[in-house]
Length: 499
Ligand SMILES: [Zn+2]
Ligand SMILES: [Zn+2]
Ligand SMILES: [Zn+2]
Ligand SMILES: [Zn+2]
Ligand SMILES: [Zn+2]
Picture 1 (cartoon, rainbow, N blue to C red):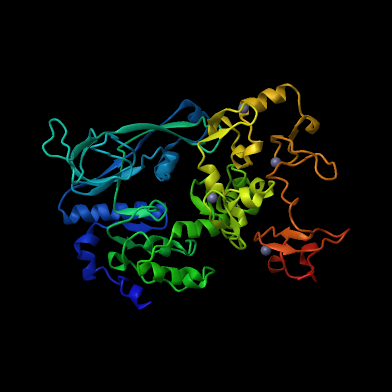
Picture 2: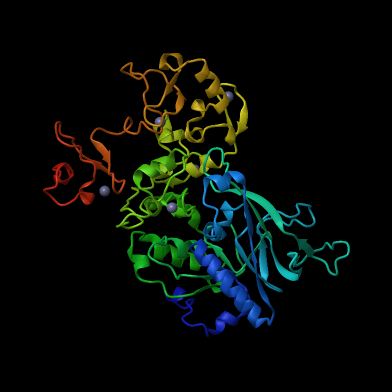
């Protein structure tokens, strides 16, 4: 505990902050807002201390006719777009502060040639610029190459890039195109814990200026990005609540990682707290920021809306998170071999035959770029399949064109091998009739109860499994004992005798 306490900076005058490695070390932050803010502030501070000018390159967004017709593309909307995550805007950021000498990272591959390898994420320094044409010359250290006409090795012109992004990117066939023009750079002063995954940094600062919505594992995720605890400074004391909520392993893991032990934090977090991007606000949020029904959509690889966006505009919006307990991380994925909670898997994976050995988690499934259709037997890019196909066991995967063809032949009957799911209305290959000779009515993602033990139920509120005998003639009990409203309010309120 002492060890990490000593790494905490309590004031801006801490002498360690002026150690060379920390002057330009990136700050690892919880979210995009913090990233923008810190990048902006530190760029300004950098320009000030270097006595050079700091300029803001603002992205130019041009909405297509489709977008203009379908969505608000007024000034307010465009300002909002500038705040979108660059992942949603074709990797071109909205507002880019720049100063000469400042460290910047590439947001796109610029040059894949073997000697240069100017790939996404590569860090260089702004060397000079031709404003307002917005051509940046970026200097890459330790370069052995020199461009014709360049004054020194490692100097590379980074030009304005035009790329299309979509307001409705989560839709199957996005149409609301916006063209953005921006320099493909970001300041390398702050990165999100998410983006820091898989990188080892020479030194890092952790920003623990976090609110209660922050994932408790963040500090630990960030701490694992450096080689030793001497390469990390923590920007403020850990608030106590960070350690008091749920993740009891948190502090222990943090201390271990500060001692230099290698722990895979990303995996640790992802296994217990799967995340998804909200289709409205486009923020990446953890499972408890989605209502159960919306998370079910995530699990079948459909776009979903977070609680905050669902409740937007309501007089009493309520908390942006639901009470949630994911249960134990006891489902091993056959892809990444990690044990994760149930909610990290599509239901179709858990419901399949031989699931124990075959099931794969959502991140593993979504990483696929191609699928093999079991009808036409050809391997095609995932875009040629319905989104939910990604979540099905391999033997049920059918491409969209085969689906269409079969539908047109009028084959709908499960006896002929096909059926339409009663719940999601998807069109699926029918499995053999079940033991009672029943026809399939629900797809693997919708038939969630089939494999559960009798009387087992998933809590509507927190998602925890609980035992409940449903009495005939009485309303179904949908919430676990912990989530039930106090007595005398109908079915849900009856305290259960089974627990
Ligand atoms: Zn949202
Ligand atoms: Zn996996
Ligand atoms: Zn096919
Ligand atoms: Zn279904
Ligand atoms: Zn509950």
